[in-house]
Length: 314
Image 1 (cartoon, rainbow, N blue to C red):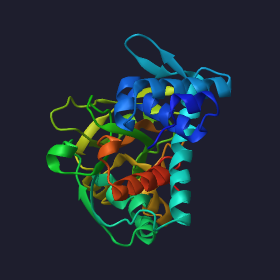
Image 2: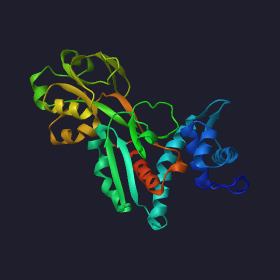
Image 3: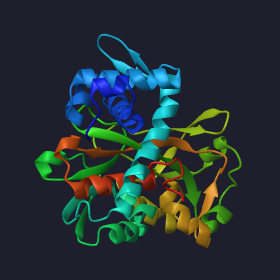
Image 4: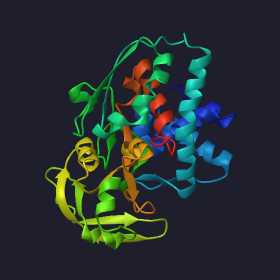
């Protein structure tokens, strides 16, 4: 990104540059790290963000000597910017596709549950934009280092450890309860959360972690904790799904993974007004100045596809 000079900001701010600077600061939680990622002076980033706040008439970032975080208004503006800016880049590329020839290889690591996600089914759209790019996907739930493994980017679920990577938030995965119609017909009905007490469940576990013996169930206005009896547990969403399809019991799963089976009648939602805690999802990349045009184009496409709140379930 080439940002406007401070003098330009003072006499006619480039709003798109300022929006990009704001997004980098909000995601990095630091003006210094944002400036490093953008390849410009910290003073330039500071003036861009300040000018944007002045233009909008509201404070977007809460600043302390040690930390920067978005204000409530800044959180709202950040979500819109994260959705809008990839579309702006895509529009520019669409009217001048030869400006940067996209070719070469992209290696992306995705969680196992995304192997059956809408993202994979929509890859043809990116291939139309970049037919000379070769896409390599590793399917894994491990937390490998991007640089150490030679990855260009990665999509990760869950809480992220502190790192030097840029983490861009994607839509969260909604975790729902399901079972086969045959299982539900042969066992006690489940019409409220405490009815789960009568059912051994199929659960998900993380190796090395403490077993979750209580499921926190959320509705629109309530939170209910239900002790569960594990019948069997898996550390892989696809294995868990296969066990659920085999009728072993009620199980939890990302909605995008079970949606086709619900539509076909092979599975039914259990307690459809309730769900478990959403899984946060992020797109991880090295710092922007190290991204090739092809990787930057792919990441912008991923953000446009999975950035909106319904990105996984469209």
